[in-house]
Image (cartoon, rainbow over all chains, first blue to last red):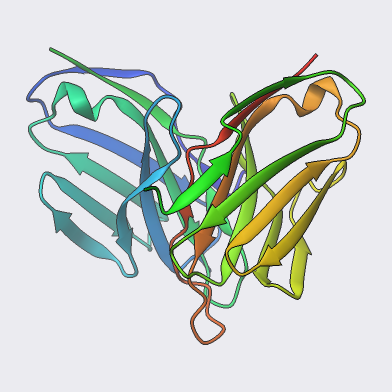
Length: 111
Length: 116
């Protein structure tokens, strides 16, 4: 079983819809979780950073962490064509040197 | 100006050539990283450095070397490039507070490297 699993997509949704992106993980030692957005020909850009189970909201974005199920989600409300990008989940442990990235989900918002 | 700057942005070269990719940052972060990104494989860590005197191998360091010339500069070298090193290369930085690693990484915009 891979440490972090993420559906590669592509996921196509109409403008204005709520988007749900998900990752599962196998290592219960992961303690902090991130979501990155990557546009074509650009580097990953940090969107959300969470350190505990539950929800964290920032504008149209909500990150959700369920440590008991080893499952994290990113919700995008009122999706816009500018949200079209690849979204990568990432996670890490305290006192460890590395962050483990999911392979990314390609998202297309259709006007 | 970008906080993490990578040069060059694009490079095409031939098998056997020596290549250097450079990264500089203005974020004042201690930690710097080199990744490569391939379709279907995601981001894979090549090398990372916690300060000028501390260099560590990542999961795919074979065929690569690095140099941390200063806190703000971290370069990646391919001593003798081969076609399967064709990829998108990213530099990233993070803070390193009190020995804990729970800080997010911040990326440059990458170098697209093609080896013929």
